[in-house]
Image (cartoon, rainbow, N blue to C red; front, side, top):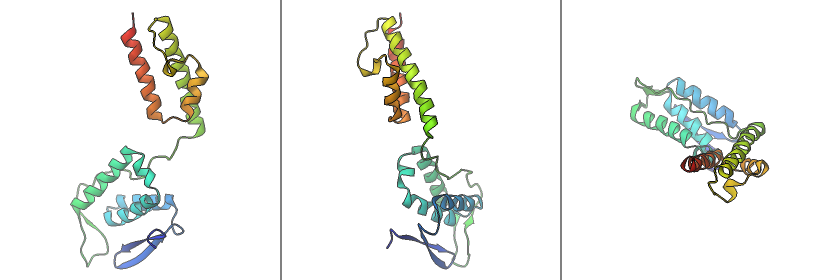
Length: 176
């Protein structure tokens, strides 16, 4: 039953939050609004509900994970909740952070633009390898724009950046 819904306690009223009740966008919006209102408990409840349904949002993005963990840590250290109160009693100094996760994936056109640049640059670096007689070989030094473009379409952005930097560093060490 836990997977079907999440039991939230708001004040002294328990209410289940299920996938049918709130969309991901609503969970994030309500969680962020609560954070801005300095209501850690409420913010945590809605953001936690979002994270249970979307664990990849945290697993795949270290920056988001660190923002969220920082907010949770701050709340744990600075929130005082009393049984008689219906809300959070938060001290001063709450960090101003946006707890919304980043966009899940770049648009197709953004990926195509990135891969066009990557393919062009990789082919140019291959040409520099040949012109400077560096002698590097293998797929990294393939002279085909299309080869690098197609590779880029399915590779993570960090990997693409690393490949470009690796080729650039090797070319610098080979420069006449």
